[in-house]
Amino acid sequence: MDDDPFETVAVQAIESPCVLVCSIDAATGWCLGCGRTRDEIARWTAIDSDARRAVMAVLPQRMAVLEQ
Image (cartoon, rainbow, N blue to C red; front, side, top):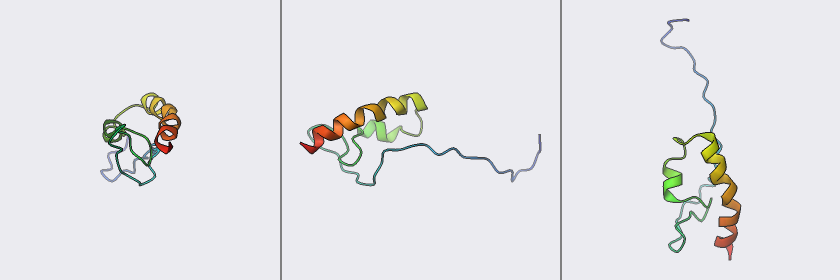
């Protein structure tokens, strides 16, 4: 192992449904841009990939509700 303090560390990108339209619907509590809740948005980078996939799976249904 190298003791180089300036060692480059690879950063893995985290998939996000964010479309930079951040406004929460008062009736549902879902973001009008991506469909996530405030809590889901806040902890997105802290949850594991399985949890992110579970949220991503329900977003199309939420967005369909928001579009009605």
